[in-house]
Image (cartoon, rainbow, N blue to C red):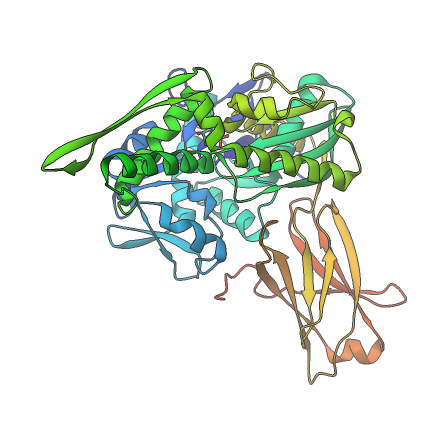
Length: 505
Ligand code: AMP
């Protein structure tokens, strides 16, 4: 491990917003300013040519003017196969064109050119890297990246590649809620049990942790990979569109561009309703009727929106209960529920979780910056040769032997670094026996991702008759290694082939 004192940039590349922070030479925490009074960069890239994009607030404005070339929410699809259930379920909602890249992974088509999402992410990371260099007056070489707790190995690889493309070496990838807890641990220096409730634009994680002397130990994690602030916006739009259809006799659902404008307006109204009890929502010239333009006008109240998203809020509360149950704890055992992610600013969410002893306030734990600051803290720790955290495996990893026999090897919530082994019952096989390694794609589906294959040589089986012990180890950077273990403890490392090369389903 390098003991270089050069600062390491902490980056929270979010579905909706990206933020970065670091500790300067004087040891002072600095959050990278994006613009005057703005500390978050919209994770949006507007392509003005096949391979040229601008990012940030200027790109955000293009959602309305040029929705087909304005890519937002790319993180939801980054590192996911195009032919997956997740992509099939979500891709229809965007006015830009999601397509299958040559490697089988999801890409976008802009101006007839297929652009991998790693490239889209790279534009955003490059921009924040440049801003950070400007703030620090020096060039950052290394970074700590954050990912949702349930991100699978492929998604972690994809974000790593995007950062490398942006000119940054990745020192560590940390789960967003864990980063938030590191921030919290350094804020309070407490000895407490905390639950991090992280509801951002695209994902929802709940993580239970023990914090002791600024060290964070993850006890259990859960959540819902299909739930985020964007679902709240969609829910609002659904009700508005239905109301418009009833009143005007026009169904706006078929028009992707119009729907995107409505989602944008609904999100702005939703955010405003965190501070107001009623807001006017107006989208001019949304359609035509009898030869004249029709505006979309509606006055939304906080109460109405709360009713529209009631089920979504209930899902977040149920996930908290699940995680508590996994850990065998009651809500009273949680000293503080740490709220991160922009969507936690919604008062109804805080109200629904009021049975917890204490919820973090927006003033104390910044919902949008906590994760980036946690990443910066990890960066500072790594530069000093420590980590200050212990994490868990977010999703189970299993092995499949020829004939279809399956074994779970690393269950979800195994501490990281972690090593587990299983005894494989191998069929008679000519030559090396291929054993496939799988990871569940996310916690809410049975879909799995092939991570790679290990081969068990006949020589090993002859030398060690009987069941074969396969051992998998998850390293602190969430990279996976495999070995065979003989009854006398002798070990043989195995190569996981194709682990990095995306494969077609
Ligand atoms: P994040 O990924 O943490 O930046 O969170 C982005 C999500 O938070 C988006 O869905 C936003 O609509 C939502 N959000 C941001 N600010 C607010 C607010 N004041 N009230 C409600 N939701 C918000």
